[in-house]
Length: 359
Image 1 (spheres, one colour):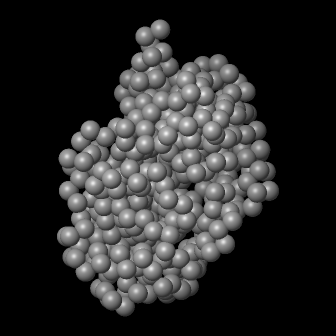
Image 2 (spheres, one colour; image 1 turned 180 degrees about the vertical axis):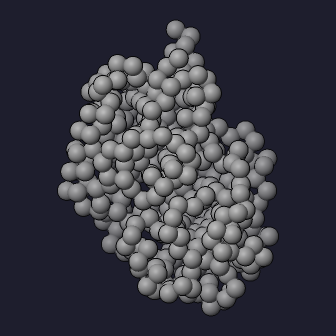
C-alpha cells in the first residue's frame, strides 16, 4: 500500500481528483486531500462527500495578492504535511505551485498534471520540481520542455482530463428540478471567464458585463424568449453583476451544482474558457468557447468530431449560439464512438505506478 497526497484548487479538480482518489483507493492505497478557499471548491468537495484539509485561499486578481496568498498557503501546507510526510509516496496535483514546492522540499515525488501550458506562470513554478509531468498527447513535448519539464519526466495520454469523470458519470436529471428548469424548453448554460487568472492579465476587455451578461444573453432572450439561461459565475463580483443586470430573468445558482448533469440535459453551453466546454462537448452537447487564447484542447476535440466551437469574436459567438437554438438536433452529436478509446490522466498515473511496482 502507498500513500498519496492530492491537492485540489479549482472546481474542475474536484471532479478530476475524486476520480483519481477512487482509482487509488480501489487499489488499496491511502489518500489524503488538501484544498483552498476558492469559488465553489469546498461546496463541491462536500457534495462529493470527500474528507479534506483547508490550507489558504485564492489570492485574487493582483500579482501581489497572488504571491502573498501562495506564500501563506505554502506555510500552512508545510505545517499540515510535516507530521506524516515520510509516509507519503507521491504528491499529485494539477500544477499547484504550493503543493509542488512543499513536496519538493520534503522529498516527496511530485506528479504534476497539466493540460494548460498557456498558464505559463504556474507551469514554470511546477514543472522543474516535478518527478513526473502528465499531460495530454496533443500538447507538444517541446512546449512542456520550454516551460521547465525534463523530457524524461513527461508522461502523456491520448485524451482529455474530463474523460476521467464524464465517461462514467451518473447523470442526474433532478438537477433540473433543483434549479426550477423545464426540460421541455431550451436550456443554455453560461460560465463567465476566469477574469482573475494570471494568464488573462493584459487582456483589457475581459469582464463579465461586456462579454457574457449583456449583449449575448439579451439577444438570446429576444430571439428565443422561452430559453432558460443558467449562469454559473466564478466570482462574487460576477454573480452580483449578473443578478443586477437581469433581475431574475436568468438563473444564477447560489450553491454548487452537478455541472455534468446540468450540461447533459442542456441545449447549449457557452463559456469564457474552461472545463465546461470540454465536459459539454464530450457529452455531445454543443459548446461555444469565447476565449482570447486558442487552446490545443479545443483543436484536438474539434478535429475528433466533438461539437465544440471557439471564437475570440463575440458577434461570432452570438451568431453560432442562435444557429444552435434554431436547430438544436443539427448540432448535437452522439459521442459514444468518439470517446470509446480516449484516455485520461488516470491511465498515465496507472502507468507511472506500474513502473514503480515493477522495479
